[in-house]
Image (cartoon, rainbow, N blue to C red; front, top):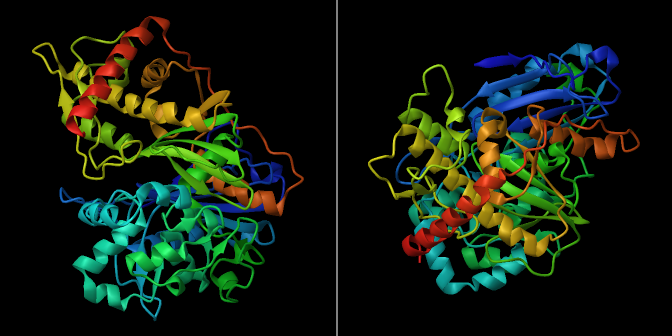
Amino acid sequence: MLVNQLMAESFAVSLDRAVGPLVLSLDVGSTGTRGGLFDATGRPILKTRIKVDHAFRSNTAGRSEISPDQIVHEVAAVLDAIAGPQYAGLIRGVAMDTFASSLIGVDEDHAAVTPCYTYADSRSAPQVEQLRKVLDEEELQQRTGTRLHTSYLPGRLRWIQNTQPDTFELVRSWMSLGEYIYLRLLGVRGVAVSAAAWSGLLDRRTGEWDDELLTRIGVRPDQFAPPRNPDDPFTKLPKRLPRRWPGLAGAVWFAAIPDGFAANLGSGALDEHKMAFSASTSGALRVMVPGVPDHIPAGLWCYRIDADRSMVGGALNDVGAVVSWLDALTAPPFRGSRDDWFAGPPRDASPLMLPFLTGERSTGWRGDARAVIAEITSNTDVSAFYRGAMEGVAMSYRRVVEELETVAPGVERIVAAGGITQLMPNWMTVVASVLDKPVFPITMKRSTLRGTALLALDTLAPTVARAEPEAGELIVPNSRWVAEYNRRYQRYLALYTEVFP
């Protein structure tokens, strides 16, 4: 269903007050495809935000996929709704982000012969273990910035080769979801450096595909598109495009970037002094740093995002996914919301939870991990159960923060964005208390969509000053809770070590 999302935030502007040029931004996330127009200051244009809902196909065996052609149709529908003739000559660029670490196999006729596998597909866990026996994982992480894990492509490609050999042989090109959308709509090939980095197949020091790794996992370098920097848009486009989307006449298209990169840009975490805290279906903590770090801690990843910058951080598969799971199991309190359960002090009745519904990424990289709940007592009611589970999510973030501080010790501020941060403000106080750090929430909706536009504006309107996104009140740790959460965190670590030695 196509829904027009009218923006009520004061940050948004009407078209007659917008500063040109405009950028059409697209965001393909875990729950839907979104689009909207932004002016040169990075402000959204009122009444232009569109969403098409979708959902991944998943099962208990670790499947997580979606039809790539469905997403192509969704993007086209968003463009149909936004890129009308009233914007002809105003929109100078189109930019896109998608969920990261996607994979599609395409034949010589440019047709997908596989579904789009998502970051959460964990069926390649056996192949990841096989690769660990023949590759030096520590050396590989320093070279590519990534560990061997089900969310990255080395294991997934080997899984397809092992389980679907006929399909594997049909594939002429391997590509991310953003590349496939551009191939079908524009007929162009090229992958953003950042999207290539999120695959686990890029040499982070050179910005080129790691030929040695490709050979070891049984694929050819010519099956992958050349990486492109963010300031290198596609300009040679089909003449038919303006006939369907007259508002895009003369616009250039920027290679699709990962949503994590866009989230940092949209929340204003642009350098090593700001850490981005993201909480949506999945979650992450990310810091942009100059150049290429010499060494990456074992629990983190490091992605090259352009010729001058890298992004260091850690990701959690399940954040909003845990909320959705808990919501399906519980009813909210009478005349209240589930977020009310986080308003009081920590409760002895709350259990410990390792919140890995679809496997763990940072910091343990256990793609085969599943959720574990401990310390349930007869006093554990619905509210205590719900709170304990989400405290476990907060503690997963803390593990990432502790390793990030060894790479980016100069962080002065944590900025938080994502739907869960706005849905559960009381939980954010729990997060601040678990981390024992203040957090600045970004209150504008769809900051990821905005971040994608900002990257294009760096090329299209480099001299225009950007508007600052709206931020809420600073969330400070509750000093009376910190000591208790420190004790629980130690029990959390002990439980993790016992379950996943």
